[in-house]
Each structure stands twice: as C-alpha cells, then as structure tokens.
Image (cartoon, rainbow, N blue to C red):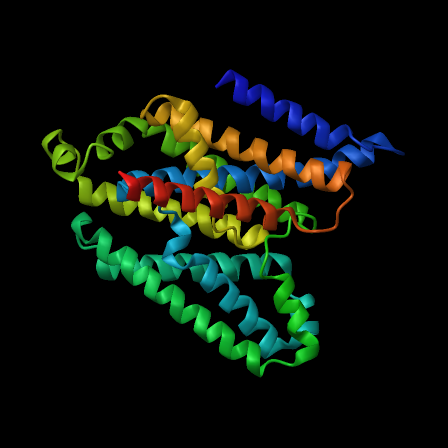
Length: 308
C-alpha cells in the first residue's frame, strides 16, 4: 500500500513539474485541476470495477458491460443530431454533466428495479445490460448515418475519454462525489468481504444480500456515471486496474483492495498522461493506449480461465 502511494506521489510530482516553465503558480493551478480529474476518474473506475466484480463473483466483468459507455455515446450523438455541432459546443457544462449523469443513473436504476428483484437475478441483469448495450450502439450507428458529415467529427471526439479538456468546476464536483462514495464503500468493507463469500454464505452470516446488492449496484452506477460524464467512456481501464490489484494485493479483504485499486489506477493514468503529454509530446489520446492494455488484460484473463 505504501509503495503504491509513493508511486502515485512520484507520478503526480512528475506530471506537475516536468516541462514547467513561466509562472509556476499558474502552471501548478492549471495542471493541478487536470491532475485531480485524472485521479478522480481513475479512482471511480477502479473502485466501481472491484465492487462490481465482488457482486458478480467474476473477475473478468466490469460495469461497462452494462452498457454505460454505449448509452453515453448515444446521448452525445443525439445531442449533436438535434442541436447541431454548434449548439452542442455551447451547451452549459453543468447542464450537460447533469444530463449525462442523470440519464445513465436513471437507466441503471430502471434496469436494477425491473430485473433485480433478488440477487439471484444478477446474471439475467448483466445479460440484459449487454443486450441494451448492443441496442444503444445500433441506435448510435443509425444517428451517425443521419447526421451532417461536417458534424461527425464532434461525435468522434466524444467517443474517447478526454483528459485534456475537463472543466475545473465539474472536476471538483465529480471529485467530491467520488470521495464520498469511495469513503462509504471502504467503511462498509466488512460487508463486501462477506458478500464476496457468496450469496448463501452471506445470508447465513446475517447479511441481507439482496438489499446490499441493490445499494452497492446503485453506488457503482453513480461512480461510473460521474466518471463517464466527466471525461467520456473508458471500457477496459477498470479491468486492467482490478487485475493488477488482485495480483499484487495478496488478500481478498476490501479494506486493502478498494484503496489499493484506486492508487494503482491513478498511478497508471497519471504516469501514462505524463509520458505521452510531457515527455513524448504526442497528441494522441492516452485513453486509446490504456484501453488497448485493458483489452489485452481481458483476453489474458479469459484465456487463463479457459485453460483451467
């Protein structure tokens, strides 16, 4: 844990200091808000993935499988389609953040309330989420074909996580929500430990598994919605962070897993952003590379599980 904290501190210091020229106060303030956004997204994605894997008892699943990223892309495409690219660009950031977060939360609560009458329906809920993800992507493709070709680039820019153009005020709002939710999940770490033993065991130990599963899924949906609304969709990043956490943690206790996953994810994201933006001077989105690494981790986990 201390090593992970030290690694994050080193990555954050490098992000703030490398290539800093001119007014140091302005640079630190400007880079500090971006650093906070990177850490917020990393913690939200990693913690939500660990909790979702605990609930589903499956280490190759992530909350993105529920179709959050597909719904987000559908929302962005629909906004560009109905408001045009210019109207989309002039949307109030807080209104857009509230719309994105509210619609994703509303969709998740509708899915949970309809299908999750008890936690044994979790597999059915996941399959339904996959189907809805396919539906959202199909509708997005339809709108893309109907949209003005000159405005398609606006939709493309919203298809990837954007860490270089994050509103500072929204960052503080998202960071506050993430801090509160993560702190509450860490506080309930004993309940998560019991749930990880399985439904029947948890019930025998006095945990109301069905109620706790609904509450935890709601918090997972909130974390995913906030991080996605802030920077855009990140599909496999959480899987990469969770896989690394499970490899190095050496324990199944969530008092270790939750903070450690946040530290590892933040170190990866901040370190990669520092390398690409400050050292290599590349203009490509670092999310593309991280998603590729997460995809490879996903394939590795599937192949390893299939070989057993």
